[in-house]
Length: 320
Image (cartoon, rainbow, N blue to C red):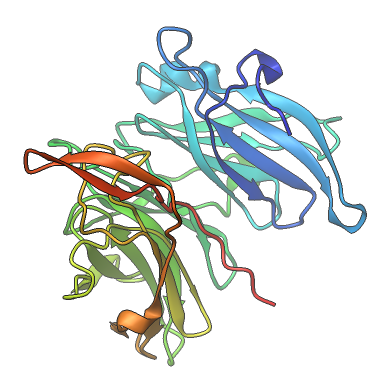
């Protein structure tokens, strides 16, 4: 589906597309045209009818109106997730901040609108780990990633979304993270029913385990192994006692483009998660490489090195 030019801001830089819980819509986060052409992005609404394999573009919401409240120079949508009633979207922004959007109706008879803006002073860096939390999915965990930049924190934020319909938007609970560059984030429920959140640290190769109710990091685990010296973990989902992690390539195409390493092995890592949610196990056989015949060249330690061009990023686990 071509979204270029839609709503006057649609671009070739769509980043994340997510279905609403009721499966009536897909919302697409669009970074927008780069400077100097534009300083704003958008979200697009697509009506979905999976039973009949029918999908229709409906409308675009320009996020430029959020700029004064964001306190940033640009308003670019990165990732999105939803309240359990499919009414509100929480949109993470590239320079920090979170924009809350009332999605209206799937057919567009009630259009999308901005209902609240969390400024960059509250969420000072972009994130793309927005995940609703069980049991009722009325809390949402969102990360903000440093990308290794001095002055930007790596944090998790837990938002209470239960009052959104009444216009109640409390500030989030803030959890500081050890390591560098949080990205993929998902929840884990232990054998006693206790809720944790895992987040992978893309540039320091850690997994942080967070006690949600205690709002604190309880474990920081290394991912490096002799056969996996620089995993660069990115996407993360947990299902059926396993954690699925995408591993970036030697020459990343986005986010961490300056971080090149010929020792990286792009692919997917599947780890067995302990019942406590506090540790994991994996071996070389648990890594599925994603390498084909395509190559690219990097400059590493003063020399040119030919490396695989593959660079996995986003991921979704489909349970059948």
